[in-house]
Length: 348
Image (cartoon, rainbow, N blue to C red; front, side, top):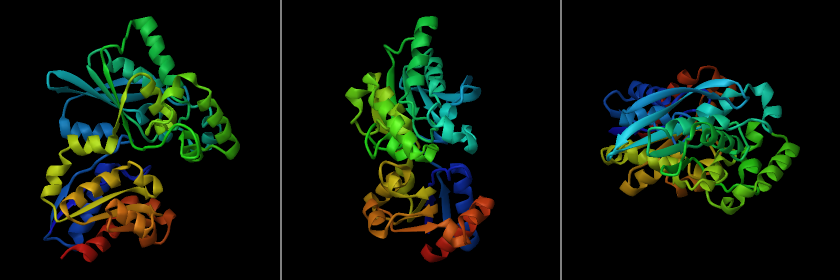
C-alpha cells in the first residue's frame, strides 16, 4: 500500500515532523513492504514556520520580541520570494504561545498575557515584505490583540513602519467568533488557565474593545485569544491555516498517490471539526475516495461526527498504551506502538 502520513504536532510532546517519523516507524515495523510518504503539516499554530520552511525554502529571520509574560523571547519569521513579491510567514505562538507560560503561572497570566511580541514580529517583517501571513493558534493570550496593536502603533511612531501597502492574512486554525460561548474567552480561556470568573472578565474586556466590534462575528475572529479580530480590524483577510498549508506544501499531489492517509494531533475533539488540520486532510482524502485515519493522543469525537468530517476511524494513543500519563511519559514510543496496531488493521 501507498501510505501518506500527514499529522499536525502533538501539542507539548511531539512536533509534526517528530509525530510523522514516529507513525512511519511504527507502520514500517508492522508492514515493511508498504510505501510510506511523510508530510508533516500545521494549521497556523505551532510548527507553522517549520512546515512552510521545509516546503518553500526561503529565509528565516530571527528577532528578540516581547513574550507573553513581558520578558524577551526569540522568535522567527519566514520570508519567501513569490511571484515578484516577498511573503512573510509568522507563527504567533512563537511570540505569545501557551508553551512560553509555566503551568503554575497560567491562572494569573490568563488575564495579563500580551500579544505585543506578535506586533513586533509584524513590524520587523513589514520592512522588506509585501505580504504578511500570521499563523494563529497555540496562544497563551486573550487580550484581543491589544498588545499587538500597541506594538504596531509604537513602531509607526518611532520607526515609521507602515502597513499601508502590505497585505495582511490571518491564517486561522479555528472558525470561532470573538464573543459568546464559542468565542475566544468562553472556548479557549479555560485551556489557558482561566477560571469561570476569569472567563467572564475576559469576555467583558473583549466586548469593550471598540476597534473589534465591527469584526467580532467573523469566523476566525476568536482565534488566538482574539488576535484574529485584531488582525481583521487592520484589514487582514482570513484564510484557513490548514487550507493554506495544504496548498503550499503540495498535499494534494501527495494525496493523489496514496491508498490510505494517516493524520493526527494531540487531541481529536469537537474543536478539530472547526477548521483544524485533521478536517483539511480528511476532506482531501474524501475527494479522492481514499480512507483517512486519525491517530491522536486522546479521542473524544463520536463516530458519526468523525465520519461526517471524512475520518473513517480514530485511534487514541492513551487508550492503546493504558493511560494519558503513560502516553506522555514516552510520547514517541507510545505513538510508534499505536501506529503498529493501526497498520495491522488497515494495510492490505
